Structures are given as structure tokens and as C-alpha cells.
Length: 196
Image (cartoon, one colour):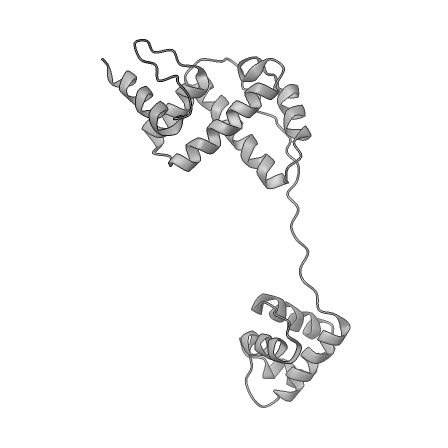
């Protein structure tokens, strides 16, 4: 038996224990298996990564009208666009597909890469957390009471937590102090009292 057969059997046993396809006697691999085997053997990917790749590829293969091997750019684009998942999950699935087709191109199994010009949904970034008017007034009061004594975002965040029961990150507090300084609402003394 050759090493290729052993790697395939090990892959099936470790990553696909729920299947009965342990390839005893013959080596009958599809291109997804070949790609996953290469990820294990050449790139040392973790079991969890391989399972995610396998799931993404098998799901896409089942969903695409002509499977992965017969899919064109429009079919893949439509498949990804129809997924009801967050943009980051769709980007991960697209990355898996790109890696799969890049592998097939390098191995000269396909001539054109259908993922070459994919357009992915834009990732939305969460808006920064903003303080209410009342909370900004509290921030100004805390800064004003600190004139002459150094303060920092951690101390101010702790004040909000103890007085209001609200937790803000140091970044949120720091951003709001910057907003106040830029809008000239904070006097120069308040700006000097703030020490990072």
C-alpha cells in the first residue's frame, strides 16, 4: 500500500467517522477529499478547520445546480448571496471556495477559477457606543472634579460603573473625551487633567 492510501484512510477515520466510506481496497476520492487531504498533509490544518472546510464545501456542492466542479461564477455568486448568514460567515465560506478552486487550478484539474471575480457583501462594523446627554454631563462633571489631579479612562469608567451601574470601555471614554476636546466643550483645564 502506498502512503497516499494511508493518509486517505486516516483522514476518513479522524474527520469522517460517521461515514462508512473508509476506502478499503480501492482509492476512490472526490476533489473535496483531495483538497482536504492536502490541507491536512501539506498545511497542517487543525481538525476543527478541516471540519469547517468540509462542511462549507459539501454544503456548497449540494446547493449548486451543477455541484462545485460544474459551477460558474454566477452560480457561486448567487449561492453566496442567498445565504442567510452574517457577512463574516459568508466571507469565510467564500474564502473556503477560493482556496478550493485555487488548489484545483494549481493541480491543473480545472482551467478557469470561478471564484476569481466574486463580489462579497460588505462587512458592517458596529457603530461606536455613544453616551447619552446625561452621561456626557456626568463625564464633564467627573473631568471637572479631577482638575488638578491626573485621571484616565479606567478611573472614569470605574466612576460610571459605581455611580451609574453602567460599564463603558476605556476606548469609549477616551473617544468621548476626544469628542469634547474637539468640539471645544471641554475647557483647557479639563483637557490638562486628562492623562492617558
